[in-house]
Amino acid sequence: MAETPSLPPLNLPPVDLRIRRENGLIKVYDRLRDKYVHLTPEEYVRQHFVGLLIDKLHYPASRMANEITISLNDTRKRCDTVVFSPGAPDGHPFMIVEYKAPTVTLDQSVFDQIVRYNMRLHARYLVVSNGFRHFCCVVDYLHDTYHFISRIPEYPDAASLFSDN
Image 1 (cartoon, one colour):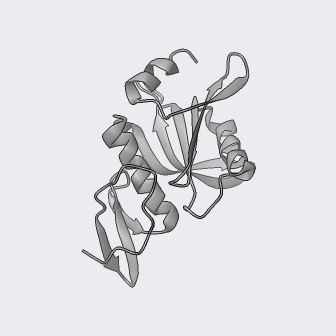
Image 2 (tube, helix red, strand yellow):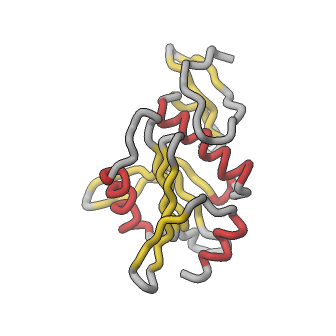
């Protein structure tokens, strides 16, 4: 195991990171992509947040994917993490999570970014996190509104809300 770079403790449950040094880079194992990826501050947040979703909030890893490519205005963009809806045969996204490094302020530009992605994906939940602060909003397509909620819902709760869409 490689030495862990000095990254701050986050406002997320701890996770057991599998870290190694490869070609001069520190890499971390991403269980959703099933490979080692460069350990950047944003990736550090992602690995902790994915751990929260799977280990604490009971989201099935089989319904999640990291770095999903979408086409948006003739450009290719990547969603950090997408959770796909339960029981939908087409695998419709129902949560998009956007991560920023711990030093990045979660401002309007971060929300604008995830909203642009959601114009293409039409997810029920939009989440942003820098590891210290986390925001989750629920989109109500029926009434063309959204509202912020105080916590990320557990998977069974989120799954039942999806059918109200």
